[in-house]
Image (cartoon, rainbow, N blue to C red; front, side, top):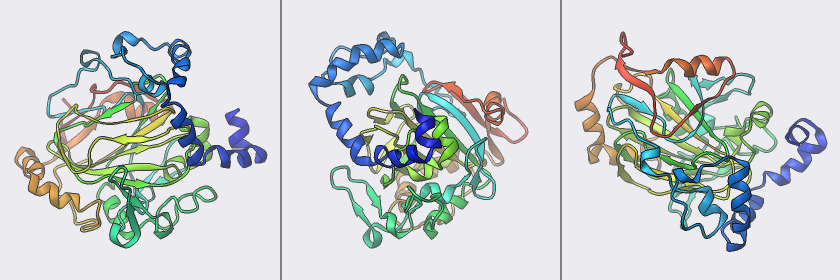
Length: 356
């Protein structure tokens, strides 16, 4: 069915309706009702979900089951401050950012600036505040990478602030965690630190399955939300949540916030979804003034006063580099997604000549 939708002219015509956010909202509303409980049993059985791993006594609707909370001992978090941990369950692909571009295997390349879209345009000039969620909403008509995304490549006109912020991560890492429907659908903070406001970029809602990724620049077309974070041990980072077909909502728990490693950051409601983590290869290098005063990135100024940046400087070891564990880059080059669990080690921060 997905092959028909993404690789035939008639299928792509139907796809325009299926990827419209309104359809996902309608499905999401239904899955919040008691009537949707009839789908819980078949969903659990068909996907081989072991409910013993989760708190499962009080499901009042399907979405309660889908975004179920995991028992703490089933997702232990590596608390070694030098260890990079996965923020969520999923299938991990790891890419090096070169000249501002990510070039996935057998997929369309995309730039980090387009991924960030127009989200760094000052909200007072070209965005609105979504009062129901409190997040800044980028105006796609004023520079977002999602403008015209249903027809184009998503590479039209990222804002200058987005380009400056993206430049900070050139030579760094782009980690893509693709969640399947049977995964644990809550995501967490991978380190201690502080964050600014969430930036929401409206768009389509394609599936994030490989066939869609091969045929569309999904991550720069889909609705997504991100935040700039100043972490104690890994410097400045960006964590982004990407919606997908039939995902009713990306539900982040916090706006400005000081967080701890392993603390829950938010959850996806029904559907496959993706978490993207952008990291500097050398996390102790100083941040530039990218996007200063632009709403989203003004969080860096607030964060510096909160102590996260000063902690990072205090704990920094000059020349430290983030090293991913062996399988991830090699598997990605071979077209293989590697399963990971939230809290497990996926890399380490160490001197350039050492990988521990």
